[in-house]
Amino acid sequence: TPAKFLFSFPATTLKCAGAPQKIMWILEDTLRQEGSKARESANITFLTPGGAMFGVKHYSDKLEKMRVEKGVNAEFNHKLVSIDVPNKMATFMNLKNNTPIQKSYDMLHVAPHMSAPKFLRNSPIVDSNGWVDVCKTTMQSTKYNNIFALGDCTNTPNSKTAAAVTSQAPVVVHNIERSIDGVPLDGGYTGYASCPLVIAKNQVLLAEFGYGGKLAETFDRKNGKWPWKYIGTEGYLQQRFFFVLKETVFPYVYWNLWTKGWWYGTNGTLKPNVKVQDKVSA
Image (cartoon, rainbow, N blue to C red; front, side, top):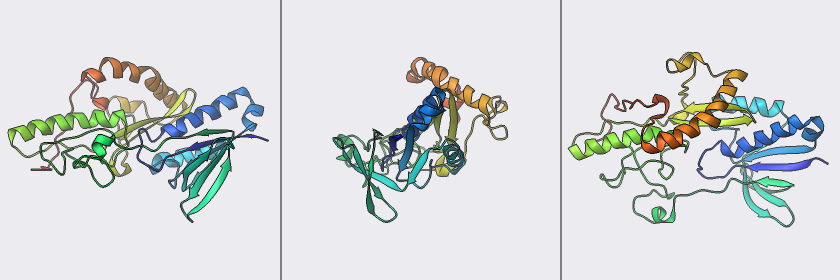
């Protein structure tokens, strides 16, 4: 009987929405490289409260195609509600008919529920869900004009990644300066986030998008940034290149440039123009 590997996705906002399935694809690829017997000995299932493999259709369609081709099971609209560790039994709620379903497992990978820290949840600056309530464009608090926020604890409807913070930071700095000067805020965050989805031990599907799932691909041949757009986004070589970025380039950039304020994401070391055409706040 094949061993049962379950990978769950939480029912809350989370850091790096691709993380719960990155490890799943690494396992699948590792077993496949060990040979057909090793891969056939594993029954891999991805369970998510969502209705698709990913929140942005463009990438979800690619992941769904890959899932089918690689024989990975998926249970959509399934939320993990409890775990019986001694008996290796996980209970999921089918959100379509509100029915609990028990699934036995040999290995269970759980992405935990996430929230803002308690001191924020209990403060007057959050919304009803406990996230810092800000204008999703200016990053200014909707409750106090002298407060700006960025990062994972805000209620901006974007994917929570370092790339998102990198894009938000110049906007916050710009708008704080405008606020101090007493002039209208004109810096705008577009919801940009990047998720390097590891789909094999040495391949990455690079997802880049903004609010509403609008694609914002740096390497897209048609709409990408010069000169990176000439690399393209489709194909094995591109996926290997993106893996090198994630494995080697991004860690170096993070520790040597990003944490020192010398890195602006897709703009490299050049400070971006964050102004929007129309004034977005007073």
